[in-house]
Length: 264
Length: 264
Image 1 (cartoon, rainbow over the protein chains, first blue to last red):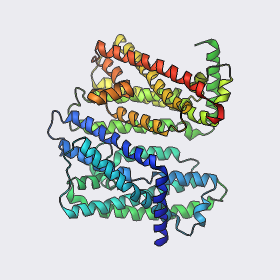
Image 2 (image 1 turned 90 degrees about the vertical axis):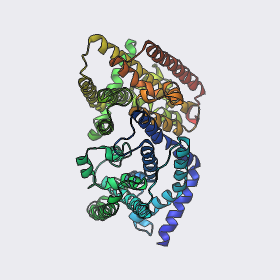
Image 3 (image 1 turned 30 degrees about the horizontal axis):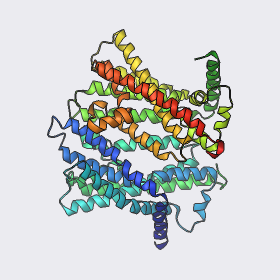
Image 4 (image 1 turned 180 degrees about the horizontal axis):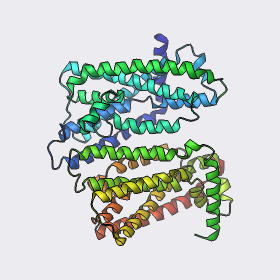
């Protein structure tokens, strides 16, 4: 475990090189909040409730959802693997005395820990700027479940992006797949609109998918909603992590023989 | 456009088409990526409208028309000039712009049209289908005058879209890194493609109607189509396009004077 913690620490320090990026990433979280503030501001002008949301409940949801989706930074893993497999420099990961997937997990942990405090600060600033009466869950059990679910959700996203990166060994280019995946993920994780606004049969289908538990359900739990789904959610996202691991192993075994260390 | 420029345009298109057909999946990549983006937008607003009747004065039909209009502006952008204009910073940094300055054709003209993307044409078809769906939802009778004035506003806003893209990329002629400018553009477009101008007010209106006028791009054509456009709004729209035409011309012209070949 110690070597992986060292990897995490290295990546944490590496973020300090791009200080301007950190500041601008913080600043641009405003676009999601501003979208929610203006859109829901005009809708709530004539209404008290939309679904089960009040205006401030809705904005609290967007603040938490934006904070969590900002923390989820595993997207770069698939393109990193893709580029390195293509130009032959993936061998770097083969000679490092660490498991490749665990290396990426440690890398993600380092980046997330670094950004955690800055994203938290950004969220607090937007609550203050937009004068949001922040709604937060009252029960510690629910908060604990939301935190566990968030961690499992991030693990799943690292696994998914790692798996998509491996697919470079099978397909000529995965760039288009990754962009389509990002578009879909923004919808099914509830980053654009809360999934509770979709018809019930759509929500029950989404409940079977892992993306429901990556950002949406933790954000709902942390804003005091859907408490009854907390434990079931942890079990489902945990199950998806196990399943994804099996898929990764099978894909690695099947396709990695194609890598000759000189690029594809 | 002169006869010489037409010949150049035809030759650029032929070369580009030949290059693109080598990678068949990538040929349609812009269609898959942007098509999924706007379909997701339709689904998200479908979810909102299943809970509310109107957003401001706009119902479901107006919003479909808005999303379709933004999609069409983006589709024409992707088909005609996006890939050419976005290559400007790279060409400035690498000194490749030298080749464009020495050719007997306007450098900006060649840069604009040399990377036409025929694979994005289905995106135009998809956008027209969305617009037709929107007008059908509104039970609107399309007169020749209404359609012609909608097309006039579309053309005007497409020019504005192009000018914004050129101004932002021309910054590479003045500064070393322009990643932030592109991030700002991305945030502005991302916000305004989801949020019609009718939801903007106060300082937000100044920002997205004047400084980064993405807020008027799809709003004005839709307002013209549904008969909500005032004379003041029309004059304002024409004024903004005229202003940005002058700015684009000056920024590009002065930028070329700053250009120092590969050392830029």
